[in-house]
Amino acid sequence: MSFHHLFTYEIIALETPYIKRNCSKCKTNTEFYCSEKFRMNANQKLVDIWLIYNCIHCEGTWNYPILSRVNINKIESTLIQKFMNNDKETIWYYAFQINKLRKLCNDVNTDIRYELRKEKLNPLSSEVTIRICYKYDFGLRIDKLIAEIFAISRSKVNELSQNGTILLNPNIKMKSKVIDELQITVIGDWYKVDALT
Image 1 (cartoon, rainbow, N blue to C red):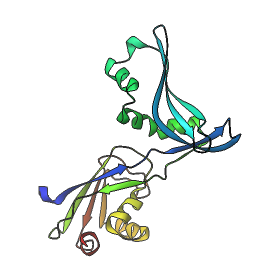
Image 2: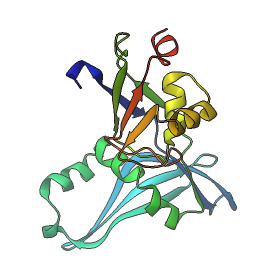
Image 3: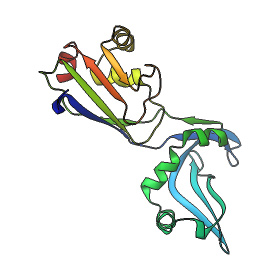
Image 4: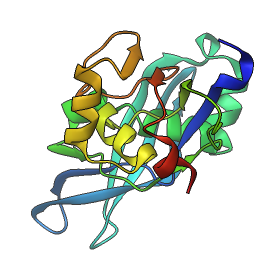
């Protein structure tokens, strides 16, 4: 397959997931949003670091533990600076650790706003491969993504998958979650009208 048949689509998260847990002030199970600020506490050479979440109703806080009682000499100086400067990329790295958050909270709302930055498909191609760039994992399903890319229903996506018109690399189920570097190969010219208009 020649280079012009390979396209990169980037999934860009526009916000971090909300979490649900009991708010000590509201006295109810409610949503918290990421404040995008770290809290650090040092006791001699031992450091604790949290990511602060705020209640959407009362601004009460919950501290998401990142590091606990860690010797400062065991943490890279560049990472310490990122914690101290509230580096956004570092904050988002921890805010998207969905599995860890689910163990500490009642729920994690991964239904977030995102943007799909895509290259226009080549109208002369009878077979193309789309490489997915997915930096922050929020549980987006493959069939939902493909339906959005080609403006078709999920049932149509599953039909095309079953007849070999859509292939995934690695070969995982269509209802699986999107993974970074996933490749979606589409065969034939069925997609041209929807994808290019």
